[in-house]
Amino acid sequence: MIRILIIDDDILVANALKMILESDKTLSVTGTGSDGADAVRMYRSQRPDVLLMDIRMKEVNGLTASEQILSEYPDAKILLLTTFSDDEYIVKALKAGVKGYLLKQDYNSIIPAIKAVYTGQTVFGTEIVSRIPDLLEQKSGFNYKDYEISEREYEIITLVAEGLSNKEIAGNLHLSEGTIRNYLSGILDKMHLRDRTQLAVFYYQHR
Image (cartoon, one colour):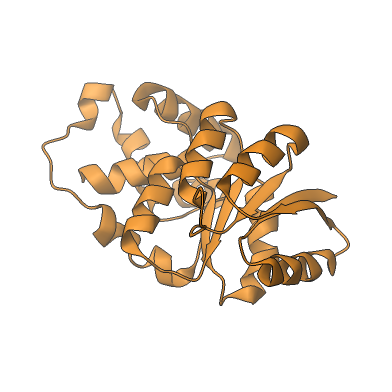
């Protein structure tokens, strides 16, 4: 059973999300809250498997709450759900290290997204994924060799940035998934990054 905490300042939306999620027998909603302060407090007490949270809320917004929760619980799986496809929000969400960012209008994607985030994947709506490279791109003189990144490791970084899973990368490079996991772990250590989302963000910022 995947335990989910819902945070949304619109009670009707929160209740609708609860009904949608609990229609799936593998999902359980542990509680609902109405702003980022609730999110931080309830996350500490409940430690849900996935936090499903709105961004724009009256008191403490979802991005601020995400940053605070991730600073305390780096492995927290946070999926942001919003009606606003705002460039600034997308960039901040990516940099904060959330596991996903979906538009509320895309209701059919919510349950699959939660299950994907629960297994460690990152999920961003199709419309959002197509804009990430342009949003994050910054020209720079960055050199991966300064981090002792090999050509094979750089190849893996580019495939991660394209959104490929470990299994897909393994297939492309004719290596085992275990080998890819080991490579990825080494890359994250060398570059002092937390997860593959931050690695993808870093790649687009420094290519």
